[in-house]
Image (cartoon, rainbow over all chains, first blue to last red; front, side):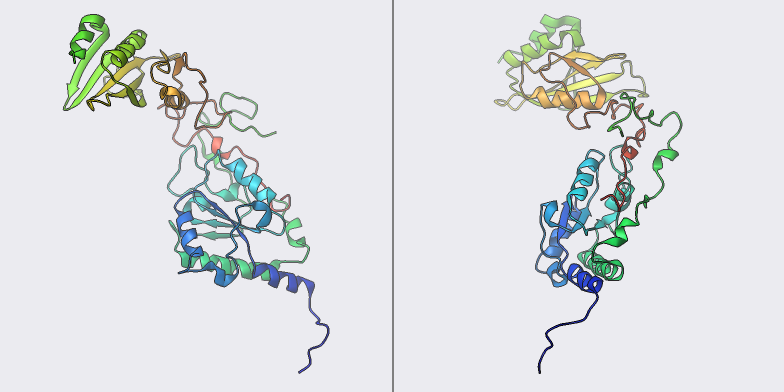
Length: 192
Length: 164
């Protein structure tokens, strides 16, 4: 059988197939979800079956951020910086109850879900989630990439609006709210 | 070894009140004589190891007379004795002398107490926040600080998908 010298396809389809089947995770593991993440990468569950085994600890080489564990407010600027350092196209999985919602840690220090400050593509419930759930989320993300991806990432340019939940700052009692940005005595990490 | 407790009772008088609960030896000390007491414990009592420093906020505590407490746990590494030295402090500016010149290990411990309770340790070489971010200005373990904070955890700009 003679193969043709050329193939006809859509560039978007080709790029999506390549990207979805070779996700390079950036493990941002801060808590016990990180242990499950390691188990998922190990031989028994083997995330490599889905082409996502190349964990890199350098954001420049990754296209999938896996936030596994609670994120405290001191860590949010670090998390955002790492996310911004990752090259496009990139995706984010929020693994576990803490990363998705703060979990049981409803205190002054713990961010109530990273989606308040980062765009998240797939959420995984569980405390911590089973490795099978993480694998399922990788498969879901692959489907999302194949369904929505474009070769030059046109689809993300339209997502300029904030997609996270409403700020919890509104729920604070008036005498407990922080003073407006600019007052250093009660606000932290002031916005510009 | 001489009876350190008797020596201290003779020497410090009312500024030094020992008590025992089960096997815990506690010394309540007036804040302005803390350094004398601690130096005495270090040299005569041979308490060569500062195990820990703890802070307490007694706001809303039944029958409490003072607002803050700072508790030093000392150990004697030869005899494995332990004592707890406690000073009581009050608003508006809780202050106590640093024990850093006596035990170098007090450095980060005192920074932590300062970070969480706002107790100022005079003479500390580098009294900065150690756990909370630099711009943080309140003291989160004080009892009048709300558990969910004052909105600090929401005070970050979100990154949208398009700008990243």
